[in-house]
Amino acid sequence: MRKLARWLRVTIFSFIGNRMIGKSDGPIFCGGWTLLSKKVIVGKNVNFNGMKINGSGFVFIGDNFHSGSECQILTENHNYEGLMIPYDDTFVVKDVYIGENVWLGNRVMILPGVRIGEGAIIQAGSVVVSDIPSCAIAGGHPAKVFSSRNQAHYFELKLQGRVN
Image 1 (cartoon, one colour):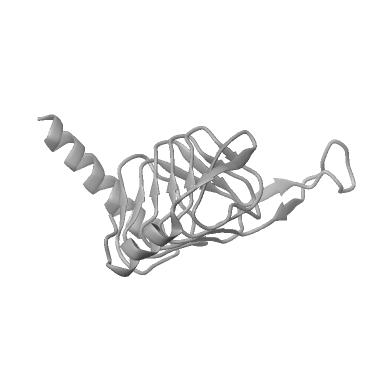
Image 2 (image 1 turned 90 degrees about the vertical axis):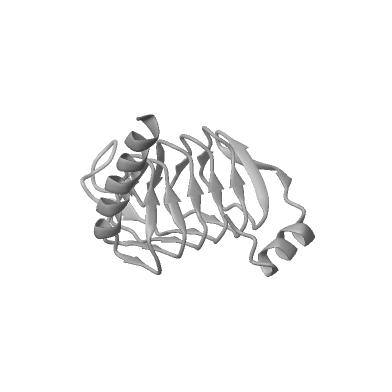
């Protein structure tokens, strides 16, 4: 019964997610409640496990992306340098770019203007405030690179088409 309930939940969320997305090269899979905008462009084999994407900027997500639950991507901030304090009613909009084969742990938050390189892994609970290079492993608040994947091994697996 539990397997049937999970299958039904994933099927319904994925059906809704595939109709909400701006542009996709293939189906997306949603294992949890996912809120997307029309300015989200995703590659093939994208797996959301509960994702919320806020703002009016574009979000580009590469092939074979995987996220943990309760992740959030923001593409706009209040304008604190506007005509009022602490901020006015205008927004500063910045796009977010996530490369292919990126994996986000649970409850990761990505702030506007961030670029996450191909093959990067972001630790659960992290707040990504600046760019993360390819094959980096980063975590914390703010997220900092603390390790990296073996690039030779990563690119060999990619060349062989061994992706999940």
